[in-house]
Length: 240
Image 1: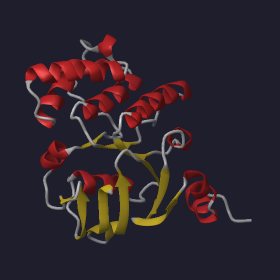
Image 2 (image 1 turned 135 degrees about the horizontal axis):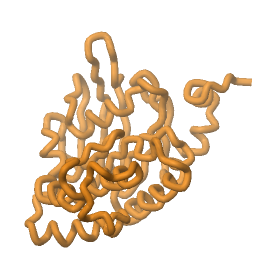
Image 3 (image 1 turned 45 degrees about the vertical axis):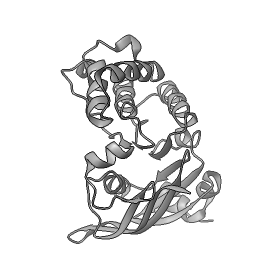
Image 4 (image 1 turned 180 degrees about the horizontal axis):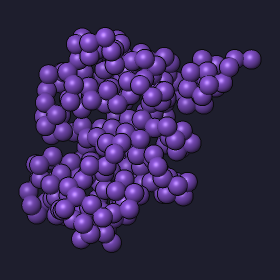
């Protein structure tokens, strides 16, 4: 049974089509990767799933419930969390305070429960030593970790990751991948947009390619990356 279903979803802004009759599903505990050139509609799809945008056509079903018209807050409360390509913490709060806001507002936990759960999230994301550091002063890897930690503090069933590996060195990227793998192993379903394909391929079960708002192809990651049309559109490799 699918945890998330995106059914024939379309969205346009004037003449710009950001989603063109997109259909995809995500199973409970599955890790789905999404790639595509800049402007392919990847982040717009996340905005539709998370509730920032309302589709012009189609519907979005989460846990067998039609959430097409539901607010971002309602979707967060129901178990959909997301990160942003550019981390957006409360810069003047500490790392721990950022997580407490997510846990109490996003997951509606009591203060006592939030404290306990946030301590566990800090441990999982390797931020325990930075718990009392001001979020705005963190280096990039820790800001990325905090973005992930804030999403996890809402106790999601579905986690949307938007280019969390971007800008990191190879060792930093692999350290973050290890954390994401542990999240996936805990049973959280993941949909991950990423340009750092070698990081993506270490985690995902299935790969989707978007192009001009359309779903171009999907399938096993190795098969999708070997597809001639994908190689031409995404990597600029002409067919031989």
